[in-house]
Amino acid sequence: MHYDTIAAISTPMGEGAIAIVRLSGDEAIQLTSRIFRSPSGKNLADEPSHTIHYGHLIDPSTEEVVEEVMVSIMRAPKTFTREDVVEVNCHGGLVAVKRVLQLILKEGARLAEPGEFTKRAFLNGRIDLSQAEAVMDLIRAKTDRAMNVALNQMDGKLSRLIGDLRQALLETLAQVEVNIDYPEYDDVEEVTIPLMIEKCSWVSEEIDKLLRTSSQGKILREGLSTVIVGRPNVGKSSLLNSLVQENKAIVTDIAGTTRDIIEEYVNVRGVPLRLVDTAGIRETEDIVERIGVERSRQVLKEADLILLVLNSSEELTEEDKRLFEATEGMDRIIVTNKTDLPRKLDFTEVENLVENPKIVATSLMKEEGVDELEEAISKLFFEGSLEAGDLTYVSNARHIALLHKAHATIQDAIAAAEANVPVDMIQIDVTRTWEILGEIVGDTVQESLINQLFSQFCLGK
Image (cartoon, rainbow, N blue to C red; front, side, top):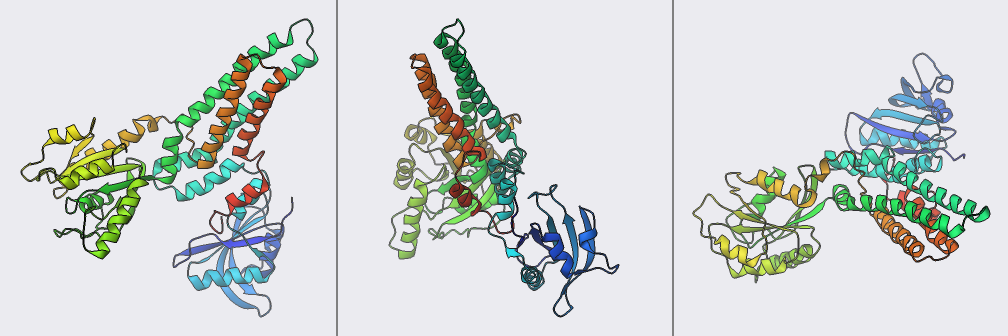
């Protein structure tokens, strides 16, 4: 396929040592050669692929020097987009990089749409759709483990597994057709039904394995929404600061200091937490604090994990008990703070309020107990399974939804086969499963979905 030449700034805007403007398309090298001048007088159009060249960009209409640059040229098909690609390395200031981009656009390139470079890589067969989506997962990864999941997907680990499942289904359908067309002396139903049950059961088991990792994978991709709750002045903000290891929240002895929601991403044993410190939930006459309390209640409903903080040096209050009721049924860890002070909290009373409570004792003033809390969080959601390097983690919500649909249709096929439904009816469910799995890698996906997915990418990627 041939597309017009696109260009975009591929590095974050702002001051820095360098910035990169990327071009891709049939005219990328020729266009750049028209505005590039090197001390030796070389012509970029004549230079070999995967080489870098020092020189200046000039405005052809005035011969004015626009910027001092290093230009990398990469010729198709051995590039990310499988088109000719040029990367112009210039100074990282806002003015410098914008001048370079404006000059390139003036020479005939078009400003790239969000994600268009990766979209071209997909459309040109360089990567499939699941690998393309992994590019953004890699950019957005907030922990090493999340990055490793994205790297495995970008390398095609999920794609290969989906490909194996689709191939098994395709071979099954082909074998059924052969048995129907050439039955010889065997009963067609006797030959094909056991075969379909066997193959479909294997596919179902493999999909089930992927779905078992999906909750962990989704957490690694999107982060675990973790809300710190507790009545005012029990140490919620101190807990946030201890986990983040920065003074993000104001810590005072005055009740009701936190008036709003404070969010921060934290890496806890490789698990990204989207940590939320809330205003203390209590009845108050302060209008501003009351708004904060209402926001806290809303955030509480959307949380994946609750860190409920209690004051170890005080007896359990009615406010504490209301928080136990508000968080009932949620994944919850009870943090008893201020253990450096004389203990007045009755742990037996806490255990009577909560079935099998997960309790971690801390003294945030002395920075004690934080490691134990991090370990408790990691065990609660991963229980060590995250270390299994041979697992394929499904982290994308679109992929998870499609796998659930595929699992349902293949189960329908198995149930129909076991009920001795006619083979041609069973084929419908098997074929539908093959199509749904194809949507994950982009083989059977609609153009409108492709456009929607790539529109979520950052500009220049």
